[in-house]
Image 1 (tube, rainbow, N blue to C red):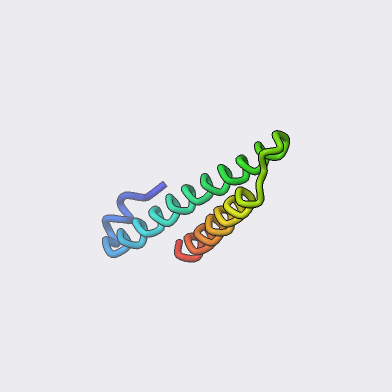
Image 2: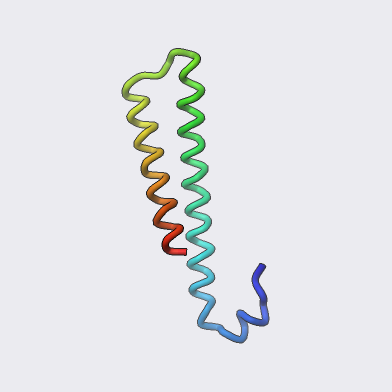
Length: 76
């Protein structure tokens, strides 16, 4: 929770707080994409619909999502 008096006292901190919140939102969206990709992988396995192309696409999505989360964690 943000302390409003502290933010008012140190107004220069607003841009850092906004950047931190933005990084956390982007990280959350990347995590949602990662979970969606892994869910698609797990759902395709028992149905026998997993193709090589689908596997590459899912792995690419997962790698990108993890990279975005890592960058956002470093920036925040």
